[in-house]
Length: 177
Image 1 (cartoon, helix red, strand yellow):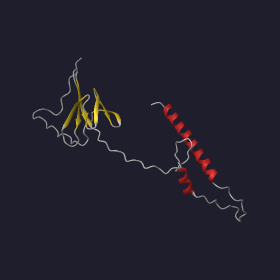
Image 2 (cartoon, rainbow, N blue to C red; image 1 turned 135 degrees about the horizontal axis):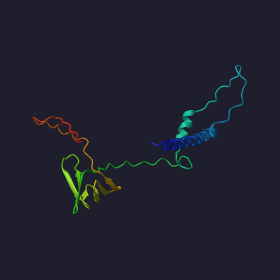
Image 3 (cartoon, rainbow, N blue to C red; image 1 turned 90 degrees about the horizontal axis):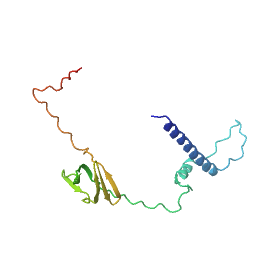
Image 4 (cartoon, rainbow, N blue to C red; image 1 turned 30 degrees about the horizontal axis):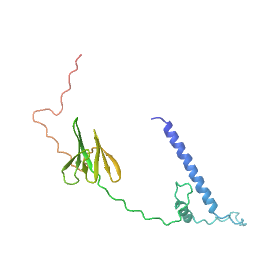
């Protein structure tokens, strides 16, 4: 790996951190009232200025960070609708031949499989395109490209017992010169 991309990334991060610190420092400095004139104390040390840190932090973090104006909106925050949980079918296999293209989908929880061709439907999705190793579906949220994956919850197959009379390891092949 080359050191140049890491160096460029590090330099960019430092520049961005400096810009953010400068913006926050300017905003906080504008909000802090000027210190009262220094009073003479016996030990020569002035008392620390009273600063309401939690209020300042809440004010700075309440503004949208990546908007050009960085000003809080005057409207009350709108309620965000709860996302709809969609069940995306899992592709377990793709069959592509010279005359036919089919995809095998897992029927969630039933143990049965659903076979669909291009143009067929699987749940609320339509199969748009089937290629070697991938299936493109069109659903309510737009196109979705899937690749075959194994079921992670499926238990592993039992180990195959060794055949009686055969060695577990094959002997090394002789070297021919």
